[in-house]
Length: 214
Image (cartoon, rainbow, N blue to C red; front, side):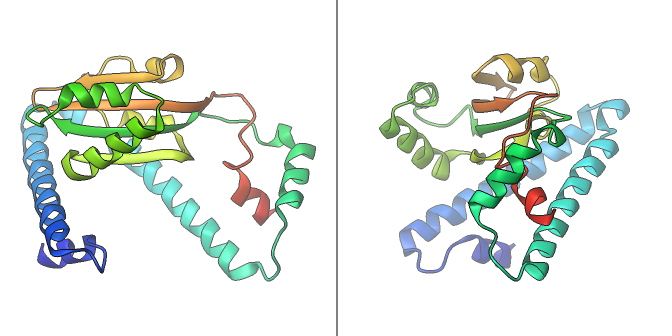
């Protein structure tokens, strides 16, 4: 645990910030262990059967890492951005999505956290200053904070971040911009910034690595 905390804190961080980050990391670690214990106790065998989801996620991660390794090893000359755009425009029909992808912000905060009313206001605001306040708040208070604003991610992975009793999240992600859920202990927030649906042409930055490999 000690080595994990040290690795989590960036070098050069002040003593005060290091203490806050350490406390937050340890609190999150303890919370995850407690939630896992409760999940094992209270979920049915069918609900705990997540092997396929885990395997799908593992497969995607391995493929992504392999693509990155190929790019690092094989590319000797820089490929111009315009070359990528040209190939994409000429071959768009080869990049049809088989699953929705989104750009989004996701975070979890405990119900016991302070300023929840303000958090909900910042969450639904498009003002830069409010988004900055939300990010600052999440860094020190959120149990989990994932910023996918600048990176496309498959919507099914976001669904797995919510508690099992969250309703028809798959449909909500396709139709709503702001999604709020809760369980006994936590509040879950998902803000959809952009979305490309199944059977639509994939965004160029989502298939950029694939085009480079081609």
